Length: 504
Image 1 (tube, rainbow, N blue to C red):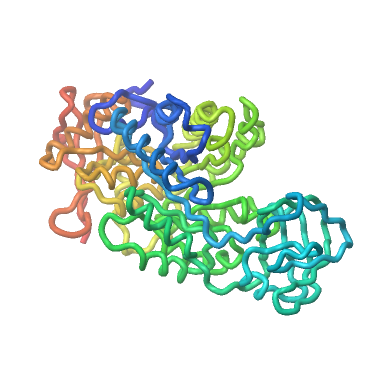
Image 2: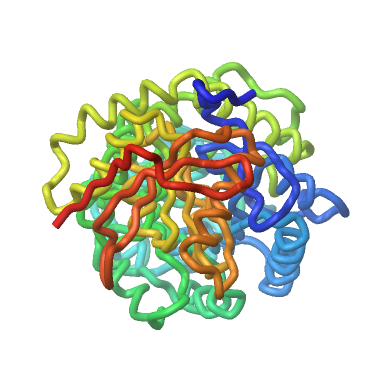
């Protein structure tokens, strides 16, 4: 329960204009849609439980199914007055085995086999000839999510000889990873192009680009997106080559995903925790939202309760600085999709409540390293902390400003008021941001009153508390700060001792 002297970091979440009050968490929740979310009532319960982003995995299903689910999300989000974004996740150049006789094959350590484009009974069929052409002697090939390891011993045209180092059972369509091979640029694939056109047609807010190797991959994707209301581009970091170009990729993207599944095959599994910290830190440094994904609550695909290790993993991702966590099979095909989101919400709330102040102090203490071309976000957070402000309000609705402030993890929620529903949904990926939808005719005073009403209704503030407003004194980027005091009639006033700051 909120008081005038102590702010509960996770007391409630935004409700659009005038929707019912529901729990709010700073770290965002991404849920993958699938057959498990189709039964009546499940999607509504997911939104009420805390889903901020609905992920569509284009690697599975048909566009007709995706369109139906997206339409349901849009309808329910309007009814519940909750901003929910759509993330279309592209399949990318995922290499896979072809059809095996009988559907499976057992590979034994020490055995010599062939990878080939044909369906020879003595070879493992590969669907992509360009993969075979990229392999060289001595390189490693991983199958079945890295459980099976081969070593290339010879090559002849489109037939690659391999020795089985670690055996196991492979199935038709099993994934293939070749972390040591330098592949020609393949992003976006022909399939990706079709999915991008579909994502534009359904007005998806975010587009996940898989198997990015360099910033050039993102540039080729952006050429397919006209300026305006196109999806924002999310770079999935899951290739070893991407780590060598990480800062450039982050700079070229609108957001980043730590895709731990294929990353755990492409790199040493023991390094995944350190790589996660490195990727999140790189995204935080450049004010890009970052999603941590893969096996967050994997055991809940079949069980109603998570393991203690999974709960700890989620908390550590929050402490690393992630903006969002993602559920995949847990909600797409799992037996307990709603319970998974409820558990996730509980873990996020507990972690944020305990460590919100520490995170804010750590980020502000490290702000001296921030370049001087972005002083406003630092000063905003410092002023809010010094005054114990209950909110930071951006009445002009700008995603760049919200991201710049959010990277310092302020204890006060960041309220972004906008008359653009598309922008409000895009902001649902950003840590600690509450997007509020205003009327297109709303004045600055009306927008501030809307933010005040939201804070008081959600018990994040009491009459007499102060908030910091960041705005622009003229055309261009925001350049001024103002302190306002909340009043009991859901409006605001300027404190008698005015505190303001302007930057050049």
